[in-house]
Image (cartoon, rainbow over all chains, first blue to last red):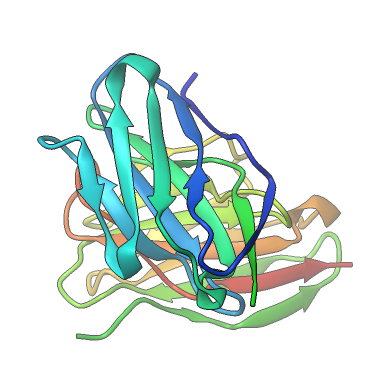
Amino acid sequence: AQSVSQHNHHVILSEAASLELGCNYSYGGTVNLFWYVQYPGQHLQLLLKYFSGDPLVKGIKGFEAEFIKSKFSFNLRKPSVQWSDTAEYFCAVTAIYNQGGKLIFGQGTELSVKP
Amino acid sequence: ETGVTQSPTHLIKTRGQQVTLRCSSQSGHNTVSWYQQALGQGPQFIFQYYREEENGRGNFPPRFSGLQFPNYSSELNVNALELDDSALYLCASSDSKGQTYEQYFGPGTRLTVT
């Protein structure tokens, strides 16, 4: 069965620190990959997505992610976090040939950035 | 462009009751997916509707059912509510069957079952 695993449940960083959130997925076929963010009191928003092509994708607010097919990974990075990045981050995958095109989410990583 | 909207925002129901949650898709989108997000967990796929027909279902019992209307809005119905149904219910819309396109999420409906 397809699954998504996020390595860290809660990450605490100081402002200006670098961020890397791990994400691994389990699926043998072609996948589309996403990172969503949920700011406190707000709805899920798309940070970035990978469909094909350059495995290094850039998203909003200075975030980027690298797709490494051999490692089934799609880690999220940001060189310098800000207090406003405090939120919950979800990695998700959808299989291109999966009936219904459902998103499979990881359990989420809560990021707390200290000012 | 109007985003995805959901109603109501919050709802409290008693075990055994039935509930209907509503979702209006983003303008131009013909596909609606529903997800359940329990506290501290990632969203879990319930089902998807494409042009008024169910187009995929997750591991949820038949008491979870849905509808999509000609204007692509959608309802999620849950019968015989159980305590474990307490969660945030998210609706997401997209402009295809959702296989390769991003899904846009609404703010969710917080359901509490007592």
